[in-house]
Length: 107
Image 1 (tube, rainbow, N blue to C red):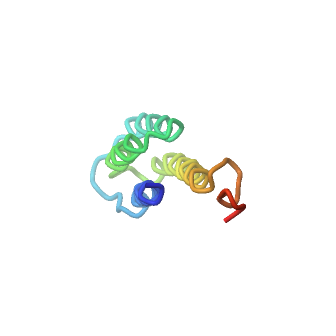
Image 2 (tube, rainbow, N blue to C red):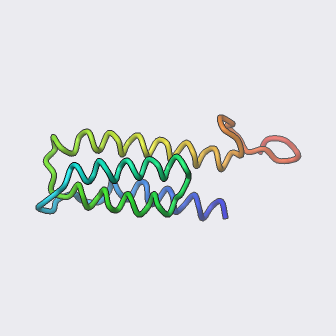
Image 3 (cartoon, rainbow, N blue to C red):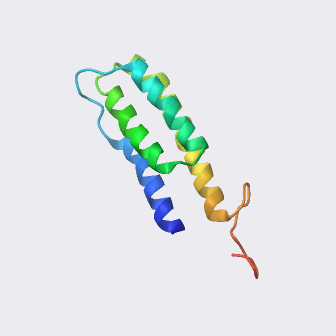
């Protein structure tokens, strides 16, 4: 289960940055609101909500100028770091722990 969860979270987090953002009309205010909901989903580890919200953010950002996208992409980068940290903690078994613990010691 852990591997599947890890794969879904990583795929969703990084697929967003790989997709083209080149449509005609964007909505920076809506993207900011959706990023707020995305942050909430990350903080509460509601990964289904995270994926849905990231898709909304992507759609909202389509067609925005580089100047409008820059602060939004900064927030996306911060969220990706939060997701990465959460996944690493989930895989390692404890916050800040570099390796997974087993009953026989570190793995």
